[in-house]
Length: 171
Image (cartoon, rainbow, N blue to C red; front, side):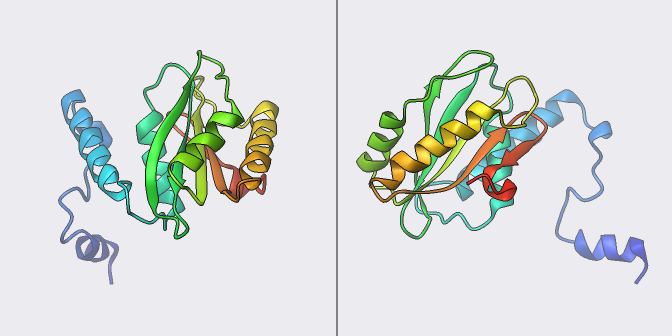
């Protein structure tokens, strides 16, 4: 099969195949981001299972991309890794946020979570986890383990990239 036929076969039901970012004006780009956010909001509503790490990454990148200050939050999950609730727990400054393990544990208990996916953004645009991020993740993992809540991952997100602690072997 020729490359053009393969693209046509894949894109037969996709009106966006072949669309190039350079061809879009600013309003069209905003409309696509809004549409993508709505699609991901349906995937990440209460009761939906987290089955695709890449979708989680995309959801968090869209959710946090435009934040100018650091925000820390969590996806709280049931025992089947279905979403109970997504919460932004702490707001910070341009280069940090104070995160209190007690509040994370308390929220997990309030919503009856069995597992969590932690997340925070780096407004600097660099998603590389800091040493402080690694230490905080260990503290949260230890604190949540005391009440039988599993930390599945911690994503550090910037506008253009994200880093998964689980993929890096940091959990």
